[in-house]
Image 1 (tube, rainbow, N blue to C red):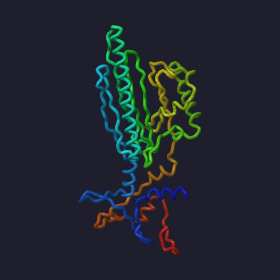
Image 2 (tube, one colour):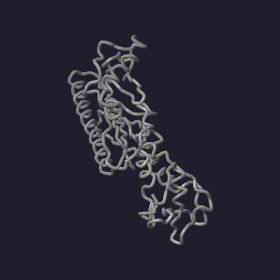
Image 3 (tube, rainbow, N blue to C red):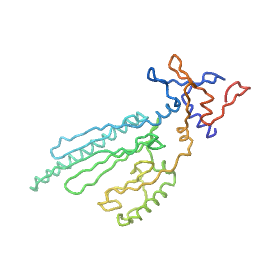
Image 4 (cartoon, rainbow, N blue to C red):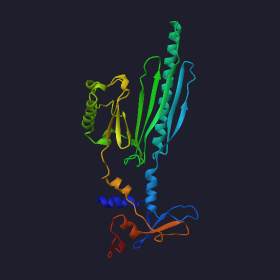
Length: 311
């Protein structure tokens, strides 16, 4: 099957053809009573709604009853992911991680209070903060690949400097969602390419980094990234390759241009059907012309006399 054929199939998905040789294309739509359908193609509108639907987030607050810990915990609750089961499992993981963090810090705070009492010094309440940042909402307006990307930030204080922890969630937002990997974004040679990019960026400001500490992207680093504005941002833990003053160093790498892929071309295909070229049946079904629709998308429709059908 040619690329153009694949595109045509993608555009025509969900359309009903009412028999061989009949040049009408039927697509049910709902419209407000008394309002004429838009001149924009119903096909384009249907595809656009599906492709542009963004994943939404709610905020869930968790707390601690410990008198020794101040906990300000706000975690994301993901909604509208195309894969509902994946969504449920991911939300469960996020909440269980946060509950574990609260429990661990409650224990540390209790131990700290006990030690302060035994050694007769003033105890200062420990602090735990958890929040999140949405980077890409899983629609084609964010990324052609429709990547959902967000970060859960955790930081605790026990009197000294903090050691922030970040959890990165990168998901292909499709019917069967799956984790986004650097290899999936950049291909099989991603390690060499990213190592080169990161070293080049470090070399521009060598005073900000411990260049000798960077040994290249490894297995422990492969999930530490987010996707935003057509770029992957690789994030390193605090103190790992730079002084603490640099926080968590980030390196931005542009994603490969995927505009030449068939699946992305299909989402861009569109056609305008003018008023008077379509009509609405009594049941609300809008009938649009097959030939002008198909040819408007750049394809040729011909009559096969032998088979007695349009091809």
